[in-house]
Length: 279
Ligand SMILES: Nc1nc2c(ncn2[C@@H]2O[C@H](COP(=O)(O)OP(=O)(O)OP(=O)(O)O)[C@@H](O)[C@H]2O)c(=O)[nH]1
Ligand SMILES: [Mg+2]
Image 1: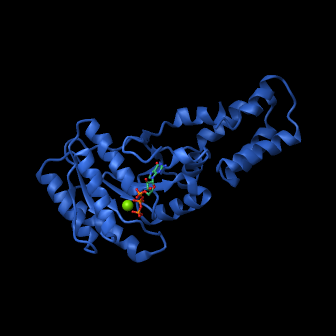
Image 2: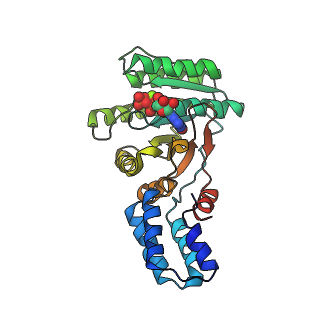
Image 3: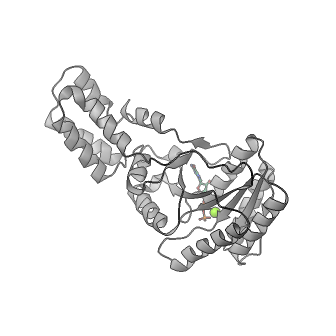
């Protein structure tokens, strides 16, 4: 990433910053998916600052746009922790659920998953296959059945078996389809009848850029999203997107997906991320 390294190196070497340098920086920031507003803000502020203050001013601005809510996955401890995974079609929800299965299993937590995507028969197979591979029970329902009832069966089983982690995989949906958004609320409600929900994780595909950010913003307006899983970061050199998402939604990126296998999940480290942007 190192979006600012050229500028900072010039400044450190005492060189003057020419108009072409600012243009190049602006171009790189936009290219990195940082977004127009944030790019403009950073350029304007850097141009105004004294040469010796530019580096710290940029870092402070970038930092000020990070989400302030906790980035840690909320784990209940005393009772089952419930996590619902939501997002638009094809963003990587089911794969992320598989990654979470492995993540928690690796920490010796007992995990149960509900396959609440009943819209496609293949979706049920997909999550079942992951469950078998990782060794996590997957509660399934009938193809085209009621997703909320699968979630309900899942949380019942999770509580009766004293599982520590319960994860619900949901079907892809567009935030504009109000019927489908209502269905998510219904899934929430039925789970909450049995046990509180700790996390609603929105899966966003990093390679969809500004479009993905808009989807995330609108999606978050209709569901109480507690964190973002930013997937396909392995396929995107556009490092600015995590900050752009946080700046525009205020929701913390908690996890990133860096590949298609169950092990390809990383905890998002905001400090290391910012250092990577400027280094
Ligand atoms: N490179 C890469 N591919 C990913 C990542 N996460 C998911 N994928 C791929 O993206 C495609 C879609 O993933 P799914 O997990 O099925 O996506 P989904 O959101 O469940 O899709 P729907 O249920 O149809 O909405 C698959 O080919 C995954 O292997 C990632 O972090 N990196
Ligand atoms: Mg899926």
